[in-house]
Amino acid sequence: MPTFAEKVRGLAARTERNSAWRQRDCFNLIPSESTPSLLVKMCEIADPAGRYAEHRTMKGYEVYFYQGTDFIRDVEVEAQRELEAYFGCSDVELRPISGQMANEVVFKGLVKFLNRGRAEGQLSRRLRLVFNNELIYGGHLSAQPMGALFNYVEEDPATGKERVVNLPVLKDNPYKPDTARLAALLEAHKPELIVFGKSMFLYKEPVRFVADIVKDWKNRPVLMFDMAHVLGLYGAFQAPFDEGADLVTGSTHKTFFGTQRGLVAGNFPKGSPLRPLWTEIKGRAFPGSTSNHHLGTLLGLLMASYEMTAFKEPFQKQVRANARALAKALHAQGIPVEGDAADGYTETHQVIIRVKAFGPGMDIAKRLEDNNILTNYQALPDDATFLESSGIRLGVQEMTRFGMVEKDFDRLAGLMSDVIIRDQAAGAEVARYRKGFLTMGFTLPPAEALPIAARILAAAVPDPSYAALFADNLRRAAGA
Image 1 (cartoon, one colour):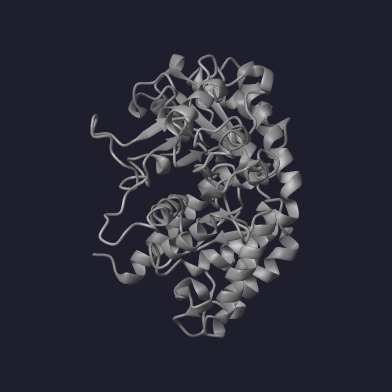
Image 2 (image 1 turned 135 degrees about the vertical axis):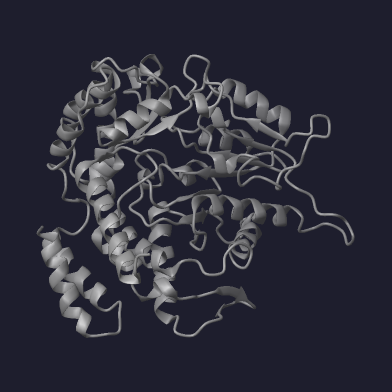
């Protein structure tokens, strides 16, 4: 049996190998992931990582139930202000620790809101009808009855299935909405909630179109946009609050700069008839869904928000340009690309390729991984199940942050075609090519970030003898 010290060294060695492989040898093209900056990572492991800061509004005051929380209280308030400015909205709730939890918090809060006036003894009800995007057409799992919507929408007694209607898509391009059919469905069904947003996401959602239709309804639906994948593209890709949305949810670690958390943003100014809904959402965040809301990642999120505020426009512009460049380059290599060529195949960070002619999506994704290219196999709209996926989902957000621009994707597309079409080994060449993209941008440069990171790390433990060792080892490791 290995000793404790041997176990520690063994796990540390495995961790180092995995990090070195993913950060120095691989091109990460998974659209739902992002490497946080060094400063964000250091914030994640600072003292708040082990602490609690439960709080709720009581009699008009925000009451905290633990001591020693002044710092993290101020961090949470500042992060809310940063993100309210980013979205241009009235409120942000930061206690959900994932995008899925953020959606569930909204569903719980909306059910409470809809039951607020029921008579004494009357049973509470669920949502009568919800519109969302169908899973096989890219709809996010968390907005499905099998996901976070579970238990919050009524069942149709005739079918035994949840009362959910899918947003229609165009027959000749299933990645775009069919607004003519959508208008008719809205009038026919009168939903209480409409959930926009996808996980396979190429084009804009019809938020303004829907908002214009329902704005004069006596009981209009709540319009919610799950922006998990495109949160870091807010404004450049789509600005739902400007288009009439009431709520934006999402995870903060895909196109946004990290950390792994969730949020709910609301646009309910004082006097809005939906203002009480925000009160219910806050109550479902705590105590309804969280206790400890992961304070280390909350601190890291504030640092990431600084970065996003500072570099939003150039980052967003480059991400969208890079996605179109990758799509065009893959098409030129003979790999079928989903979407419309006239639109550059995509308006987001994502590129969807069809690989069925070369093998099952799951097998192609594994072949790419074996050659240091990390992707995500994906069922396309004409696939029967996810286990028979004929597509691969790609995202350029992480490699954009590591310095890639449009021309750099030509060579990467060529290496991908070697693997996908010709089944050639390209792992060594991929690793060599990655060495040209190791310095993260859209944050402080290394010379400025490293001393700050060393101080945060040194302060993370009480023993002062660690401070010099941490600082010295961090500098030497960075130069390795």
